[in-house]
Length: 429
Image (cartoon, rainbow, N blue to C red; front, side, top):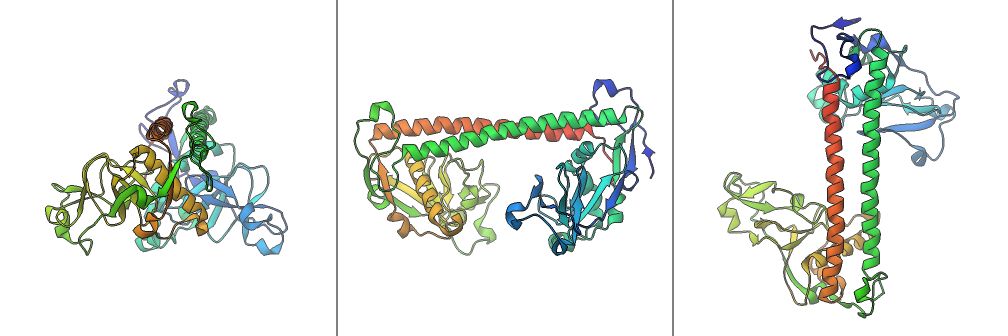
């Protein structure tokens, strides 16, 4: 397949200046690219690895030094505009991931799991090719060469010949390079916008984290370092244990899990498990499972507006429920409060407590926590009016974060749809 043209082999979306440029063609990767097997030897290179969905990332921190000498003789050299194909299977990329290296310094990747290649001439344009791979061009082609068992165990039976047989869609004619560059520039601009919006989201989250550290007293202190003007002279916050402030219990579910008679996906009631608790103080849109009337009789019902916290798995996720449901034994239910408490404020207090516990836990992960241990958690809280003011402030900030998250996801979805229209559908047979 040196250059195969198809009848009406065109993308669904094309820039105006190229609409009369003719049909596209398919060329095997082996026609336009060459495998690079150059080893590191005596060169000094930056060790790299691939993070799926991100691309090549430096391993300087992991290795603590640059590659040098015979100890890295089995590493392949990467030069600017070279591609590295990591054949390790992941859930998101079962056929492996291909990334373009854009650094000016020499880099290297281990040849045990990588294949490196580069474009032979001026076309196709490397940045254009990179977006084809980001659109999973190689995955659609290479999946035929992967045995089911090999995919499951992360070892792919893909040869260089398999990779080089990949059909690549390329605009034909004198304006081919210009059209490729136009596509790459368009998607690159969109990537820049996505990066900018992601930075805005990170800034909002960092601002919220810093604000919470200021709005709540630190350990050993009785007042926060930042207070709203109307509460600056309100005095110290009250303190107590969770057991002093609230009544709570664990959920319940008949054992063993998994029996068919416990579930009724069509007519059953929502059943909240750890999986169903989001990281935005809300439940996910619908629960993973719905339970039967028989199981409901042996479980614990909670009405809309109940404060809950996860105690196993992803420990410390807090939510205020927004629909009636039954709840699993892996979560704690706050049933009532012995003190004047604003529920949204208290949810933040609980989240803050778990964040502190995670910072103190080995590796930043809480392995397990019991209801009894939780009951001894120390809690500080102000008057109900100040609680309302803090809750309102943080809720407004959460609304901004949610809006920014939705904006970012919309841009990513737009990019995905745009890529599907800017490239024609290639052969998969």
